[in-house]
Amino acid sequence: MVGASGSGKSTWAEARYRRDEIVSSDALRGVVGSGPHDLDASADAFDLLERIVAARLGRGLTTVVDTLGLDQERRTAWLAAARAAGLPALVVHLDTPSDLCRERNRGRDRPVPAQVLAGQLRKVAAVATALDLEGWDAVHRLSEPGRAAEGAPQRPV
Ligand code: ATP
Ligand code: MG
Image (tube, rainbow, N blue to C red; front, side, top):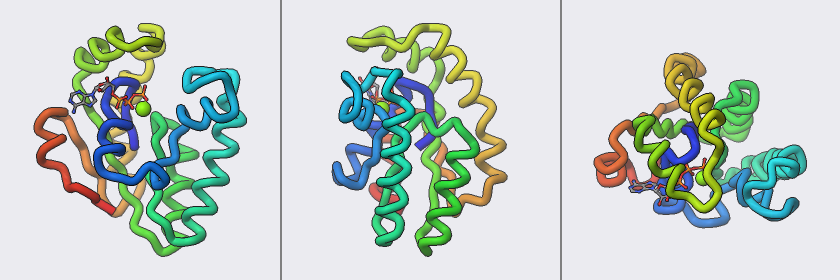
């Protein structure tokens, strides 16, 4: 998954994949920290995330990595790991309009600070070209959240 906070990544994934197929950095912050928003727990959460992803791919299991997806080094390492496991590797890019991400963010219990979200939105806008060049088997780009929810493949993997 690739997309800013509030773009709908978790909603999209949870509508299509079983809970155990989704490896979420927020959920793992909740496991090793005080909650999904405990940024102090990020390093431990990502250590666990990488171990879970590697273990699942090693068994050939479908794995949805639910993070912002904006770190190219991590992202391309997941691509390489999927390849090594003989699995297809796909990106779901939630290119949701910025205004909608901001509106959803404002409506959340624990909004991401506006400046942090602005930085994410800038990175998401710039990431499309990189995704297209990284060598994924497919890049599903969902720009219209309503239509995307109806029209996207149920399980692209
Ligand atoms: P984060 O990076 O912070 O985890 P996210 O990209 O996972 O954010 P979600 O938690 O899936 O975003 O969605 C944010 C909010 O937007 C939620 O309140 C969710 O109900 C709503 N939402 C997500 N997708 C849709 C959609 N297709 N239609 C309407 N509302 C949606
Ligand atoms: Mg989420």
